[in-house]
Image 1 (cartoon, rainbow, N blue to C red):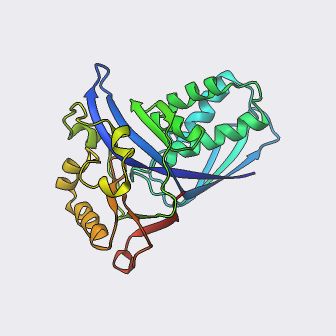
Image 2 (tube, one colour):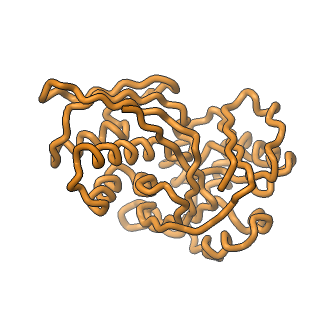
Length: 272
């Protein structure tokens, strides 16, 4: 069985508070993106086999045990009857890029297992499982535009239409640690709630819709600020960094000439 697994961008990101447990409360809106990984799942006939996870595509340097799919299957085996599985992840979505590709991987595998082997698993139980893997995982259970609050697991559908616009993603081959990015930020209450900002026309977002990670991350990686300014020079109605970076994106009325970004990984999509 082959599964397609997408990603997301952040429309704004407000870091509003540091919690006693060391995590941060945020406000953001996640927008699904069709840049996709491919996951192959094969049931292994022999019982009591260990989890087998192979990867291809973009090289993954971390131990497989830190992979979100591996962590999900390990957690499931402790509480549910699932068959031994061979998993092949073909990685196309860059890591450390603010796109949540790994979170999507775990959610899509759980959807498949629920439909084929875990029919009694409720949505509530599934969301609890995913929140243990990572906060962003919860969003990918439904994969609709959503407003995200708290540590990222408070996820509610958010009505927004960008039909007719084009999305351009630029990944400049930089891997940014989310933990490091948070350590560089000073949380502050939001001056304007993100839902209010996004209820206004797209052409009003530039001066009021901000990603709080940008200031410290741009200071350390000025290339990202340069890419953002170049996206505006090419006619972007709105441009920003996704999550803690390093992917930059622009929303355009028409797809621009991307030749100057040819040395980077680029992705374009028509928005709905």
